[in-house]
Length: 76
Image 1: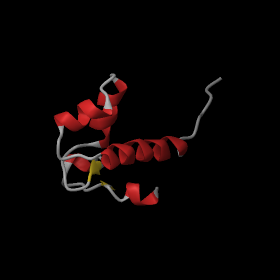
Image 2 (image 1 turned 60 degrees about the vertical axis):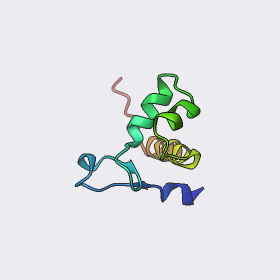
Image 3 (image 1 turned 120 degrees about the vertical axis):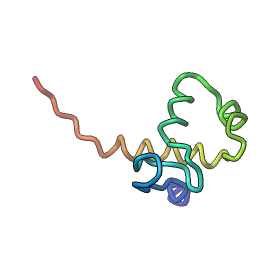
Image 4 (image 1 turned 90 degrees about the vertical axis):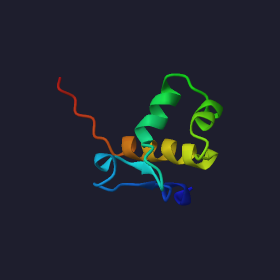
């Protein structure tokens, strides 16, 4: 699974440093947003034929790692 994360890169000169799929200008955010709004993996891959199933898996894994590092601060 860690190999999947190698597909995600950050470069301050590309897309303002947002995490992207390696060798593309497609952000993790874009892929997750499309999936979140109900697009299927097949639809995403049809829209971006240079992406792979593993790229989409990498986006999901990356997001899960980012969320796992969040701290919850209860204001109450």
